[in-house]
Every structure is written in structure tokens, then in C-alpha cells.
Image 1 (cartoon, rainbow, N blue to C red):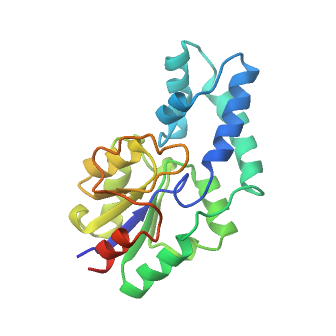
Image 2 (image 1 turned 180 degrees about the horizontal axis):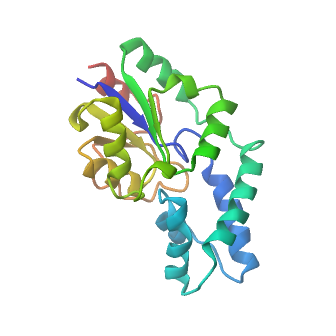
Length: 215
């Protein structure tokens, strides 16, 4: 019996990955580099403090983490205020979970400020029992720390908890935490192998996902 469902946020609840891609593509180009889907896949799910070190490792550069993230955050927050929309079926799935009395949580590598901005923009913050952001953990996905923390705060076990993720790093994180990882890919992550996922769903309202929740 499923007692809880944990949601990733970026690229899963809200279509933020298009914004990230546009901003990072421009930032790379301004510095003489090309931002690729391969690089993007290595960054997805990581804490903000891990992003620039990963970029430097990939490119062999020494970009200043503080300066890079300040510029990136300013551009992304500006875009989030006007461009980001929820993925279809999000509100409907939340309604199903409410009807079934299933606990709901968010486990996201995003920092608290942007998380609050989006949750308040779409008036869904009150619908979640627990919210854990990247500011609250030491290690980002694929490390299991974030989902272990969510489980502890929810008071449930991993084997009775579904985690919804859009990218491989998140699926691995959920799997290592002992949860049931379900992938809902977006246009940027359809190529991911989702090796540990128990299901690769088409959408929030995929009948196979709903069956797992309501069984």
C-alpha cells in the first residue's frame, strides 16, 4: 500500500528545464563554449553548489562558482516569474492523492527561494506535508540524502513511498533511499536510461501510475 508520494520539482512539476537550457546556453556561449544535452544531463538534479564545480570539471575551466550562480539565479528567477508553467495533470494527481489520503512531499535540489516562488505562484505550497530543498542537504542527487530526509520527516518507509522524477540522477537517488522510483520524462530527459525505475510513465495521469497509487 502506498502511503506517500514525493515529487521532484524542476522538469517534473513545472517546465523549468526550458528556462534552464536557455539561460545556460547563453552563459556558455558568452564564455566561448557550447552547452549540450550531454552536459545538461550531468547537471540535472545537482545542488547549486555542485553545478559550477561539475562544469569546471567537464570543460577544464575555473569559473568562479559564486559569480556564475549569481548570474544564473538572477536570469532563472526572472524567467520563472513569467515563463514557467505546470506540467499537465499535476493538479489532477494532487486531487487523487488527497482523495486517497496519501501523504505528499517535495524533494528538490532547487534552493528555497525559487521553490517558494513557484509554489506560491501556482498556489500549491499548502498541498504538501513536507518540502525539502537543496539548502537543507549536504549532498545532491544521485546521493540518497534528500529522499532519506523526506522519508524521515514524513514518518514513512521507502518501500511504501513512490518518488516521481524526470531525470536519471533523481531516479538513482530515490532508488538508493529504498523508495519506488517512477520516471516521468520531459523533452530533455527522454534519452535517460532510467535503469532503477519501476515504471517510466507517460504523464502524471498514466493509468499504470494511478493503479499503483490506488491499489
